Image (cartoon, rainbow, N blue to C red; front, side, top):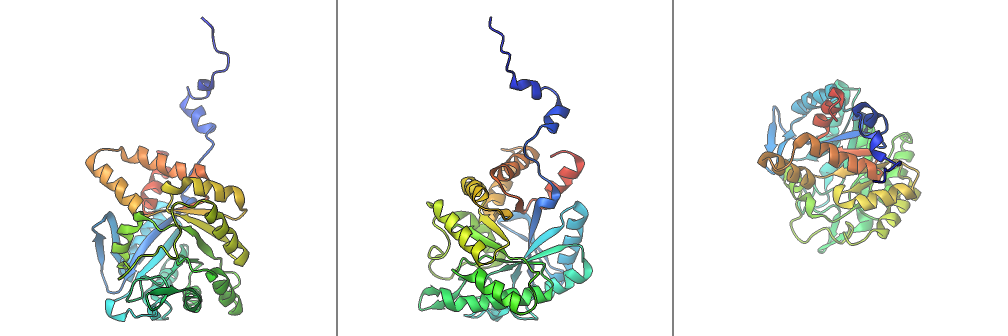
Length: 329
């Protein structure tokens, strides 16, 4: 019998050695926690399609983010939900100084200065039609939207956002935001661009959570076609040229190939968003006992890291950070 002398298993026999030679690791510092904030007080309402996730009023949001910090997660991204009656065709609540996001940013920054706050910049939650830009007829008008997005990003930065993150997918929005920030003495505020954001079926639960479903049509004219990989590089490189400090691929697991291609092509940090549909699908499997929860979280998030993501936006952030702290991840 021929004895193999090249034995990769030698490095797998001992659990300590396995951990020592791991190529990919995940830390709590790489996690970003997405949260939804709405008008009102003492609100903590569970999102039906996202078990374990909630819409918070500002007071309960502070409590939630305090526990997030205690778990070891130091960054959160905020999505605002205004009152229905305040929504209009041009999304004025997106940049209102007394709007839900600006007030939330000011309060959280006051109460929890150690938390890094990222403000999502988009119009879909604030328009009465639910699209991410201004409407001309039944078409989303790219160029007229840029000024509104820039105003929103500027308002968030002034209110305390440490990072602004445009998610609308309008052409030229990074340049417009960068110019607005720089012209107002906010040259230090980074832009995290949703650079490769695909028109995805995985956004369904988010649209319920943020109450932001479009009232007509879809978003395929501005979000990316899931058939395209090379186009993602074009979008990413354009955003970096316009001033993006970090870029994001969204969703994550269905687009691991895109994350890998982007990571190889750029020298800025790359983020990936494990979106609402990914979360809900996993939660359904966990609740049915079809998948082992901790093992599956570990495998999926490490896959995103292995593909090349430096940062991961995930609704599992708090849970995973606790597992990391315990040494169970």
